[in-house]
Image (tube, rainbow, N blue to C red; front, top):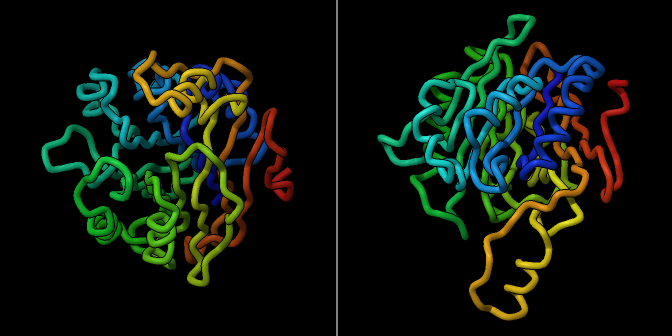
Length: 273
């Protein structure tokens, strides 16, 4: 299968680059499954139902979230009726929504998508390692799923790498989100799991992590309260990772970084063209 994972959508530029480019990429690359992190899609903070529908309509199969999952209070309600929108599985019991979902591709293959959130330098939740083990035990690769994608929404690179090694051989792809900066360490681990520490963001890179530069820069210089952070409004860049899996094992056989747009050096899986 051909899998595409895209990093955090940040504001209107991130939404526009996804809705403008994803439909054509889905056909051009013959993608079986597309997963996108959408936790910053609504003005940089959370996601609304209309935005969720827009991103799914553009060709995403699953939208994952993170520490901003419920910044838009309507998400507490509509996440219950939208099985393709998932929040971290290690939220406490009783939190609305679900932490994993299984989708069926056009070819009939089953893809398990799991979302967990780290605990270092970020809002502490329940143990994410226990949560991901629980989800994989109920739908293991090869036995119940033809591919497994795990989004690790975390601040610390060490914690994300720990997930890569912990799940090597049990997931098709382990990919980090949250820091909005794409890392250059995409690779296939010895057990066959594709790994990337951070997918980056879908947003305007003429910014500070997708936000207009002036206010966050002022905060660093003055250390005083100020105005609300607002997304930058320039042209967005699409960032993520492309993985092709082996049909027999569900593990990765190729992995490529994806960066399409201004400000960053463009790259994509040229073997797919």
